[in-house]
Length: 338
Image 1 (cartoon, rainbow, N blue to C red):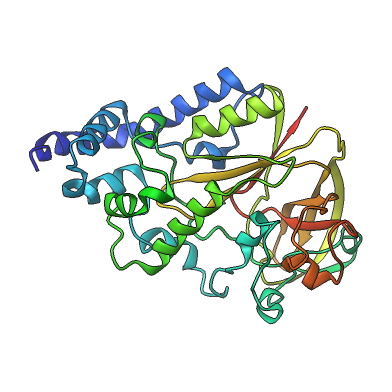
Image 2 (tube, rainbow, N blue to C red):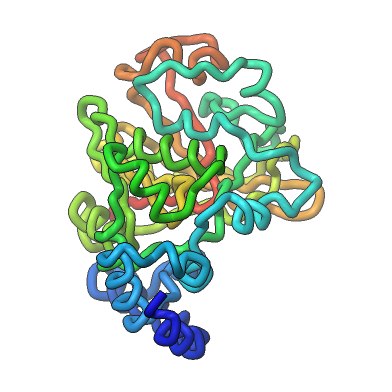
């Protein structure tokens, strides 16, 4: 409570902090990545907090005072302390059904998936064969949306103060004011479980809880000279589309790409894994209104996948027998070496 006056002062200058934060992110990018600037949608995820905000909120966390300023913190940091505001932005399009719950299966190759086929195949195929994507053909596209698409990263100094661990989940929920929030509670639990599970053999993983963590992981695994690929929009979700141009953009299976999936969490978290024997395609999805330039990943080594994985249930084969492809969802990103 004693920090109310300083926080009021910070609110006055907060309108100037967004561009400063984005510039700081762009600077870190330029120092580590051999590209002139990050994609605009990724740069927009930079924390809007100024250095003054960061210092003050770190002090509040250290002194267990953040709960008294939670509303200001969540608003100024553009994070989701409940499932209301940021989920609402995604759900404003009433022409689409609720967010699909089977999207997280993309991260659980070694686990079975209990989603009924009748639900998984509603509105589009979440998994498919490479041969099914041919120019001039038709395809039913699944939900491409990120359930919490508008949240920002926390700055690394502040993110390091967050108890990002399933062992401290109650402390974490208390910190973000998650009380009787069933959806947010499930999001937090699922993300922490995914981030703490042991990787399957030959896969390198991380959960990046800051923009700097994301860049550092990419540089460590792929080097400084990379290319960035992402699906342009959610256009085509739950639609039958016409397949336009199909272009192989990464086919060197000896140089594995890094796939990073946006996780539902109060602030921006990416689950990233470097996978062997993956091809990446750019595919034009033609809807009645516009064209979506989508990214498709095809996994050619499914030997360690669970035989009961949803992909095999849908496609009728098992591990090692087929390649499995899927679309990269909104805010997902693939990094490849130049």
